[in-house]
Length: 183
Image (cartoon, rainbow, N blue to C red; front, side):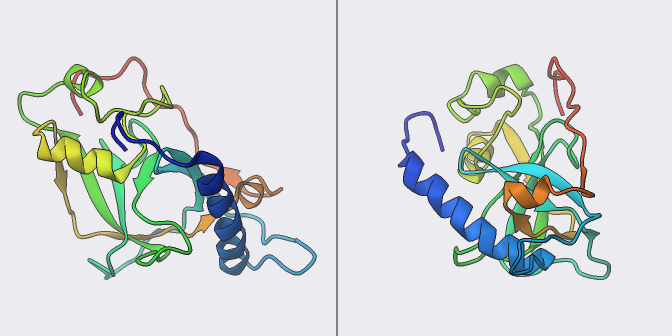
């Protein structure tokens, strides 16, 4: 959210952990003993100023849009930062199928303009955006453009312990710094 908004941190985090455990267990086949299907690629992302984790299954062939669940790629697929997601398990609208939205600097705008705005992440210096509302507000303010390339990806959100399970491969977080002038 924008810098002027506040959240009820502990309650929200507890909600994310609880719903993430359930959804992650269902998506990856976590058994009653807590065992996890290994060998998947996992990535971090952002949801309402919180870090989340998801399994990166990739593009769904032949599908151009599915439901209302959106994922925002800042400058491209993990080009400048981790993706920003709209919904998490337990919320109306959540699905592991994400409609891709590509975010770029608007004509005549620089990353410095975005950093000086109230929409940039207050909490994570490695992220320009950590909330979908801020991406949309930056677009409304003319700082970024958001385009829909007609791509859907399959990326179920999972709890951190599933993301860190032995045998899983974590996608790199080697994002360029300093920020480029535009993206």
